[in-house]
Image (cartoon, rainbow, N blue to C red; front, side, top):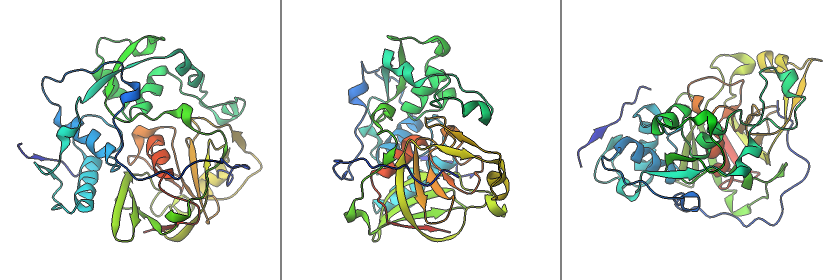
Length: 337
């Protein structure tokens, strides 16, 4: 295989009130391909190496960010971390030691279901209007599909040049990357995830400058995902360095929108309680830390991860933060540097 050199440019209220019970502690395994969702597979005549690499890294829990078919900063960072975790030379270069051929087919088709549309609805731009809704949903079915398959809307459109993505209906088929889908309908309703004592020795390490989150157990790197941290030197908007603890992990969180808190870290009398949903500003999951108002959370715009700034918290793509939540527990350490 020819070498491919990757460019390396490079206040939620704390937690919901009741817990999810009866869940078995998840095991760290290789993520399966999206077989349950595959209606049929597409043979790839000309292998798309970059997309294949992105999917491979995504499956191995070294997230490259939203799949877009382009080599870039977070693909390179994910590849280097995969190499380090597997004891390979850390080159950031794709070579024969990276078994990307295990990803085949690279693309599959997803068939839109009638039930998918319950996650689609109006999304006003102003928080005072959003607060009137019961859920903050995807404004378009195409965004539901894009997030389900870890892909940017632009790349989804590129994969489907003859499909009117704005006019999809039940039964429509869409070409998508062959990843393990983010199945939003399987998420528990508002509540706390159960504690998993055997995970207490694990540590999350946040690298603000590199915009990366790493999960470690002893000296072993288990997973990594890109993040959007707060503004460096931004006062209340800066992600605080230090050693913290996870207070709890809440699914389907609400969000208290207060411009004073967001801009200056001070509460005001003008605020709006935004309902849960994939387009809630903190996404579908909140990992609260023992630092008031600070947490690791999902996002309403996964394709901007690493390319924007947060208000002090650490944003992660919804599919990544949900997968991360299965590998961590309340009481774990979080180190931010």
